[in-house]
Length: 150
Image (cartoon, rainbow, N blue to C red; front, top):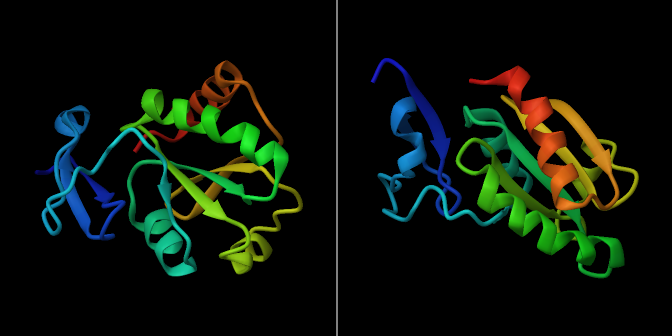
């Protein structure tokens, strides 16, 4: 597996090696045996889990910083869900509850929610605040991800 990607399991956080040519097939975690991609955003509500995914995954992460009390965040939720069906497995979509992990908001200088942030190998590559329609979200993500292919 010379050309393998490291994919962090959204369920147990185990690091899996997936051949690049088989990424579209999805695959299952070697540890918990659950699907590596479910075309649904994964909730990462701890800084340790977020860090592992952000630093160890070879695919970019699209992170939605949100809160349940935030009206625009609730508007963004179904759009983000739809985006997961179209962007995975090339991009992992992550939801971070700002009330559960305020230290991540502080660390990343998140000033307002919802804020979307693209991360690759622990480095922020793009950021956008506010609600975006699905077509705009997909175009924005693909524009920034095309420059950082693993």
